[in-house]
Structure formats: structure tokens, C-alpha cells
Amino acid sequence: MTGADEQQAAPCDEIAARFESTATAVSQLFREHNRMLVGYLTTRLRSEQEAKDVAQEAYVRLLQLQNPGAPSLLRAYLFKTATNIAIDRLRHRRIQHQADVQPELFENLTTTGMEADDPARQLIEREQADRLLGYLQELPIKCQHVFNLHRLEGVPQREVALRVGVSERMVRRYVTYAMVYCRLRLDGITVDQVRRYVSL
Image (cartoon, rainbow, N blue to C red; front, side, top):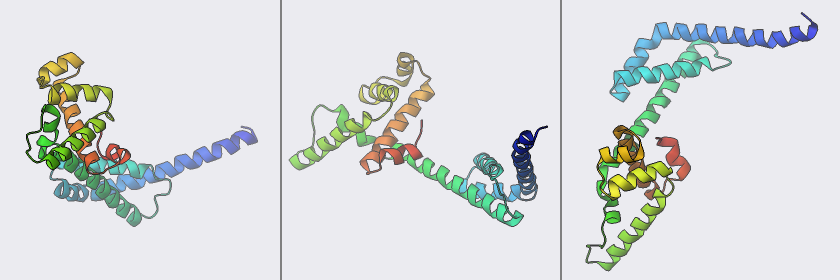
């Protein structure tokens, strides 16, 4: 091996040794604290399976650390990372739930005339309807198409699935995503923020 080859091999060996050290530490954490971690996450998420998924994701993130530090620090990082992932999941769950909270949000888009007697209320509803139409234009084309067919035109999910060439489950997912997306945009959430918390 030449001097240049030895210089190249040295960093590789160092990286391999560092990864092995991290993997050993994470393996020890798993043996000693996994049951406690999953129990803690189950309490927060109300789902043991989801708790196990979050714990697994936290361990994967630990394996990506270059300098894991002392075992006590690694344990604290593990629980902190798992907690953050759980919080993100709970936030995502709440956002998805909003699709069912105000199903009347899109009613004005499907009516030909406003039924409110108050001209001011009619104006507000019309402005909201225009904003919703604008937000729908921000969605992926297929999502827009599915939403328009099912929610605005009243086409049954099964028929929408056949027309668009997706499963009925995907139809429901597109519709839910569109409703949550528009609700959050109406609440003043930016496009980037919405897409960070809600995904197809």
C-alpha cells in the first residue's frame, strides 16, 4: 500500500471505528432502556405499535451521530429525540383530524347562490369561497382532480377511483389532504409550513 493509499484508508478506518462504537452504545441502550422508552411513548401516543415505530426511528437517528458521547448523554438524547418525534406525530394527528371538524367549509363552493339574507355575510362567504378555490389550485393536479370530482361534483369514491386510476383509499387520502391543506391555509399557515406537517 502506498503512502497515499494509507492516508485514504486512515479516515475510512476512523469512520468505521466510530460507527462501530456508536452501534455498540445504541445496542446497549436498546437492551437496557427499550422497554421503558416504549412504555413512555405508549403513554403519550396511546398506541404501542406507534410507540415502537417512534422508538425505532429514534434509534436510527442515534446511529447517525458521529460523536455519541457518554452513555448518560446518549440516553438523554434518545429520549429527547423520541419525544420530539412523538410530538410531531401528535401534531400531524391533530392536523389530520381537522378535516372532520368543519366539513361545511366547502359547502359554499357547491351552491349556486348564497342563502344568507345578510349581504355582509354573503360577501364574507364569497370571499372565503374564492380563497378556497385559490388554495385548491396550490394542490397537486391529481389531488385537485380527485377533490373536485368527489367533494364538488358528488361523484362516489369508487367511481372517482376508476376514473383517475387510483385506489379508493387513495381517493380518501387525497380528499382529506385537500381539506386539511385548505383549512390550514385559511388559518394563515404558509405553504411551506403546511407541507412540513401534512403530506400525501
